[in-house]
Image (spheres, rainbow, N blue to C red):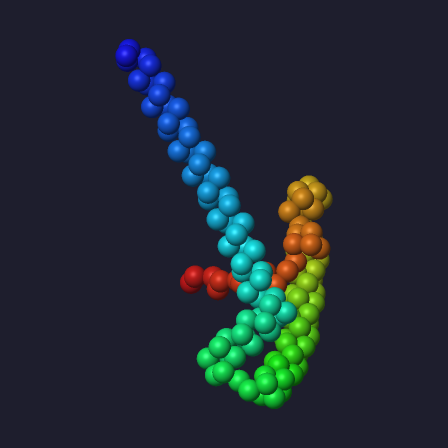
Length: 134
């Protein structure tokens, strides 16, 4: 085999490894994001909590009904808190955007308009803010 042919094989193999790595990273990121959303979904938390309690404690049928009712009530409360939190976060972000807009020049406002978060981007994830290092 010629030296050129060896290099072509090596380059092809490296390209395959690189593409596979990128595809795996993208798939892993998307899966982790789906899992995180599911973890914070009160409906799924309800099911997981009941399954865990039932598996560890071997509940009697009457207990299972009573405990499921208690979990359902807690989940309803969590949904309200989650909705209030998202609503309050949206208000804070909107106020911040309005306050920033007042401080900018016309040219800066045009560029800032491109940076502003869309309404769909304002989610519970915005609460994961790290304090500024001093």
